[in-house]
Image 1 (cartoon, rainbow, N blue to C red):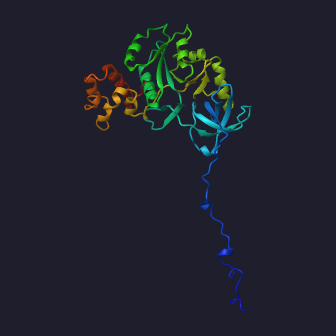
Image 2 (image 1 turned 135 degrees about the horizontal axis):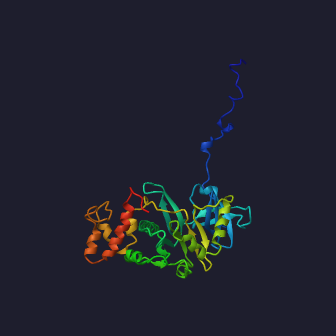
Image 3 (image 1 turned 90 degrees about the horizontal axis):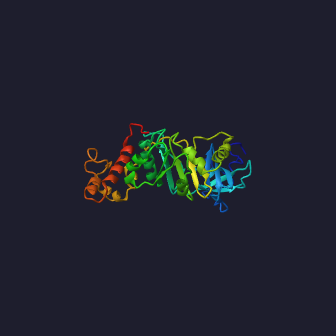
Length: 341
């Protein structure tokens, strides 16, 4: 038989004899993920360069260092987050657990770098209250900063508390009067006395602390938390010993609860805040704003001449001082072209 008429081995094969290997892009990928039924709950108390210090079961006497599990991708994890851990949760030196789940947050303290920055950063999660520390003298009180902290607290679901320090140097009367209509809890301390009222307010709560440099926040933390500096240093050592002075750290209170110190926050950008987020903190104005024109900023005349908040106040359904305080906060949020200390 000639070569042209002879069948080759390839000619005798049909498609059932040929195994075709699928390309890499067509390989089916399982969507099944591990359930991690044996995971243990913990609270994040410190963060440093891809490592999270976690209090197992929310107890400060059992801390575990963990990394983020691969399946979480870039899921953000911040101080205060409640997470599930698997792996080595003994807490022994040179061991690592894995964070496999992050629980839904009940509150968030957010900020942007400035008012023109569209990228918001979650600073603390699940805090129940925000303690705004402000000195009455040396340095003098900065109401612009207080207002911005109030806006961030209201928008994030935290209960704001104003702590006025150094009352032995100046009177608190002016500040108390300025914020009286907000029904804002206020605590007044002095350097030569124990902050018993503050301690009672924070017990059994998760509280975030914010304040400018020099207002006495560090002094307050040291009085509330014995060995606070040692605790911060231990958390910082997770990242090869570098002191993380720009990140939040949760410190346990002796009588129960946590203080989340936020030394890196000196101002709040409010680009992520909408006017209605602030109005939501004033129950008497929530329904009336639904009748406001579209895109109303609720600032009143001349900016918003048809704002319904004026109608409510003129009808005697809300105190004028409350509306004035609300609009001061709204104005603080609206100043997108200037920095407010």
